[in-house]
Length: 126
Image (tube, rainbow, N blue to C red):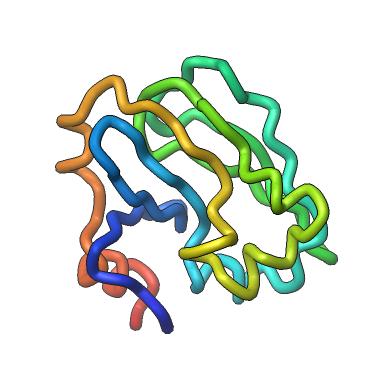
């Protein structure tokens, strides 16, 4: 199971990469493997302010649809447009080209409440 140590994680299986006041968010390698083949990513929150734990979109796999929960509060700045034509990037490269949204961070203290890779391993029993 690939869990980069430089990222933060949520119990809802999202990852966060913080770059200054901006966060890149996607779903973990564990989450994509549990969901199976991703066929569509639906994000309707671009340019909207969302709070920590709000649903910011959905990921559709062959057999299920799963809500995506925001690990942080802020404004969704961008949807990864590569996913429009290639949603399977979430499966093949969840921490790279498969990122889902980029958002501004309105409360940096929330970052401290996120899980480390080690903490997330405990959540998923790895």
